[in-house]
Image (cartoon, rainbow, N blue to C red; front, top):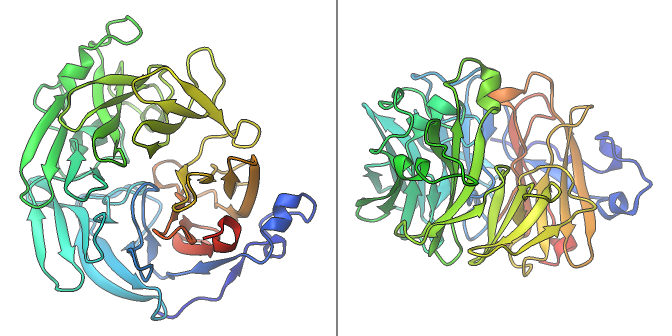
Length: 420
């Protein structure tokens, strides 16, 4: 694959940036470099996973030959490696039949490894995960799908993706029906832990257990419950997930996006020491800042909506970027900046433009990297959020975008801005 021409994202690129405010001037000269091109659509997936290997040379990606509809059981997703030093050459790694537009197939590098990558797949009547060594070609199968990996590279956590698909279409996988679709709070499924080497599985918490836990002193057991958005703390000792429920089974796609309640839960790596980190019902996108703090978009009880820093197992909270980060987005910390720099995006505004930006916490300074047009055809389940993620060096931002008319992947060099 040949490298595409650089796409200007400064004021001259036509993404709606004016030359007035200082934060626009700070972004002058930046370029969005395309690393994939048509005729197939390409993207990575979620924002809280390693797309780029530790050396910075290889980026992971997915490709598919259609857009604008939900995946169907036969649809196979191509998995590839992009050599950023060899004209963005696409190197096929395999495929998956367990994927969605928002989080793809949980494709990612195993933390601490420059050789092994992992993704979810469907084999027969079960979901699995595949591990591939890009250097030796060795392949192995784990008996369960993964959702998030521990930073120590030793284990993953997961939940039932067919349950998610049943209650929040687009975030689970088609092809295998939820066997408990008539049960509001199953005892058989929930949060599990799987050893990345042996494949041994340990059930940590069941959906029934969490459904029996009152919410703001009210019984919520008589609802349809599921788990979503799992993450492991930087020291691999605490787990974080969203427990969600809705009063009725889905009847329309609108209900798939609304009508549910959320509470953020933490526990230790064995499912013990449970704590409701955010009981407000408003938790959305989040990352761990360090082993004790969670950076999340929410509206805490009796407080304003925004990005809040919550201290685990306490009621301590602090608003971050209250004057600038005023809308929900996909937030992460830029590596090797002592958690001073935040990378974030927005949803499309009225002009269908998505803003990609950095925020410097000590100086409360925003640096807009670009605004990217999202065609109206990208909406709902198959929308294309930027889902920005840094490489492991904290030098480049990689993101998915449709500003050239179809879903492709790009990167921008931010090293001169953040000092990496």
